[in-house]
Length: 278
Image (cartoon, rainbow, N blue to C red; front, side, top):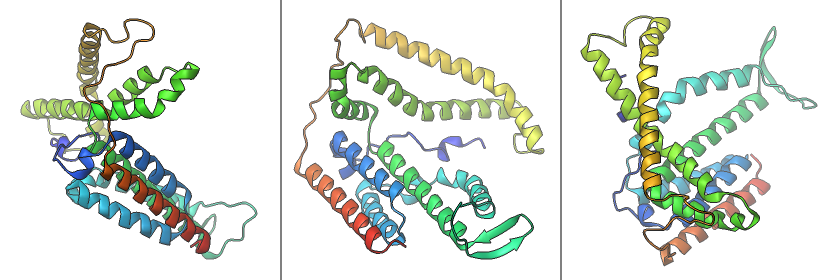
């Protein structure tokens, strides 16, 4: 419980000099959107296998440990297992013929329920992996610059793209900061004799509840410090203001190759889904 930073890895940026880290953030965002759209729409296990092979290539290029990338996913497994069981037992499809494999009173297990629930869990796994890989290999500045460059055409119709992207990126990057703060509070209370691993679930919640107040106080202080720092740099000081950039984004040959490979993978997966739906 104390070493939360070793378990909750979402939102952390690891600059290990890998090929994915050096890629143009616009390319990474486009590839991530294409892959997320792919795994959210296909239903063929062959298409998922193609996506898995592509993710294996990403894993190799990232030079990250698979255990580290999926470390936080293990904490969701009990909850996902519960959701999977509920979906299987209470699956309902109107105007569809179900192949019942087991039935007891109002509970039943059908072939279609197992198939659809399994596909849902596979999609959750891919979505978590793709978003985590994007966060691991993209810094806060690059992620902001890439989103602004891709969504800049929306500014012509009056949408506040820059403030929206800044708020979104800061919210995502505050996750590891809050994890570190929670870990610090746990260690401080443990040093005072509090054992968070003893007792039932209600007793543990009662021990953790007093930590919410200093956590929110620390969060508000960090938000105030960030606000003062942004105002000191004249962020949004006048209409038409635009944030300056540390470097100019330039797509290299590897970025074009990665985008073409992603498009080809999506095309092959869609064709396989059409030819072999299952």
